[in-house]
Length: 420
Ligand code: NIG
Ligand code: FE
Image 1 (cartoon, rainbow, N blue to C red):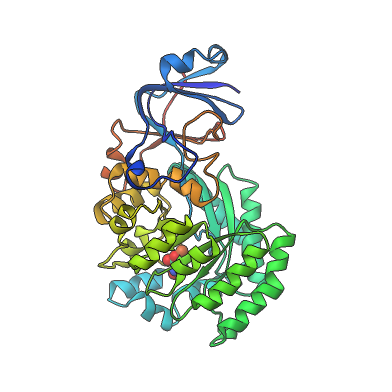
Image 2 (image 1 turned 120 degrees about the horizontal axis):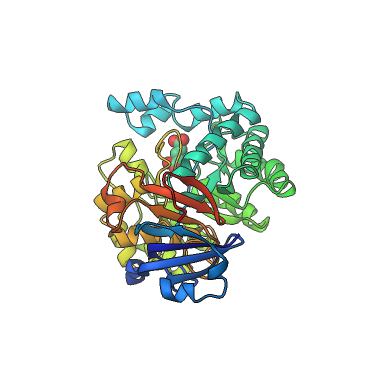
């Protein structure tokens, strides 16, 4: 079906098919009084209304009025852990009483408490929870997410999580790209033996993930008390050799070598980066790794410090933003809230934050040629926002400004009448 959306101010992010860095991140491709013509789930034309209306198909299209509001690409959330059995309310309460993430994990909370819950839950129940959350992402203007396993940590439970993702991905308009995060924590049955656990993952689980086509990426938590750079590296290399893209949880709680590992393996992204040093930043830049910042987790954990975004941006590394949606450190699915935190705490400009949440996030998932911009040939993933100035998106902190959301040209959420 052809549709023509008129009377919109567009954030097109038009430009080269490459991650944006440095000053490029401040260019959002604003077109006032713009229009977008879509057909068959793709954008046919986007730009000034006169230009778009001259397209031969424009006359045959269903006409939609954006009411002068901002229209941008749907958010790409390139780092989430959305499959879990229950929220971690106990951890939350303990933290409010002053306990740290590490202390709570050592006392039986943390990732391993989510693991116990996932192990005791069926694939169907996990899928039901994820299906509900998929709706929350869409309602908030996110049209594509990456989704990690990592709360199973035994062969059956990891595969159960990945199969739940596959089931839900087939039944929701939200586009979900799965990641096998087998090396998220060392499970109790391998306590003190992380290398052996990694060998088991590579020998027993990875082949099934390949065979059933259950993932696009592999990821590891490279951190003191979790996996050393060597252990994480052997898991990620096995994944890379099996054909998966590589991502790394790097330098979140300590400088553990994750960034250098990501650079060495040619990873798509290195994520968190709270404790990066200049040497790490240089390595990421040279290797073309996207730096994914997750300031929602710092905010929710109540940490006084945030990743050194300005240093990373000013060094010319392409930066992406994501929620890190998970039950422990960031139960927030709304990218608009993450933009607010990025502007207030990372000192990113609203333009940089928006570029980080669209074009660069798409590149972090290897989707830069089809997602994250309003340009002919791109997927018609669109977000209409109830505002007229892009600074309002981070400014109205905690709000959901999504007035209409299109995925592959289909209207999947709306709070407003668009038909003329
Ligand atoms: O990205 N750092 C490791 N993984 C998650 C936290 C997961 C959890 O606490 O359940 C993160 O913050
Ligand atoms: Fe994470």
